Amino acid sequence: MEDIPEYATQEDFDALNAILEDANKIKAEADERRRRLNIDDESQCPNEDKHTVLPKGYVQRHRWARSMQSTHKQTKCPACGLWAIWVPKKGE
Figure 1 (cartoon, rainbow, N blue to C red):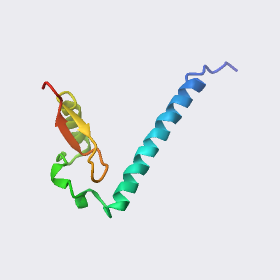
Figure 2: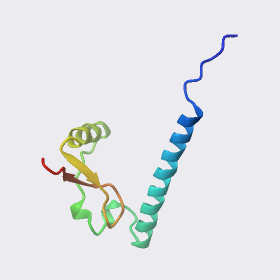
Figure 3: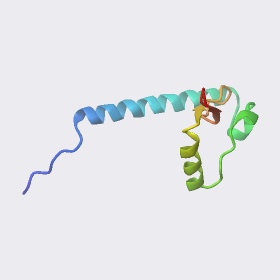
């Protein structure tokens, strides 16, 4: 039987695990912040008026986000912890 080449190294897996740990930590912090503020969903955020309105469809949202990222940056809402606020990049 022919040897199957290894495409991912242990370093690759370690890097992915570190990214996942960071993502889980960020999500846990946002969940805790929302729990403390008694926010069940985004529509209950006291800063909801600052949240950027997104297109409805999955594909439409991704196309919109791809075009927005060239002129705007996404920031975390200080109230609910969601990355729901898009602001123009400086110098744009």
